[in-house]
Image: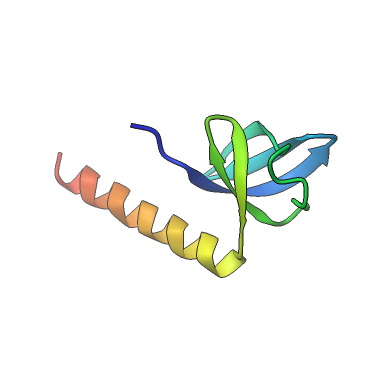
Length: 76
């Protein structure tokens, strides 16, 4: 199963952005989201940014993902 994750843009150089989420940094292709700007959130899937997100929406999604991870840890 694949999951698309909200990640915050830290740097853009051409069609590549450096993004971060939960302390993990990676480079992603932003060709599908040319409107992306530093400080914005993107939905990242398989190394590609596929959509921009409003900050409140991204933060809510990240909060829910953290809650799910905590529940999974409690179940072990």
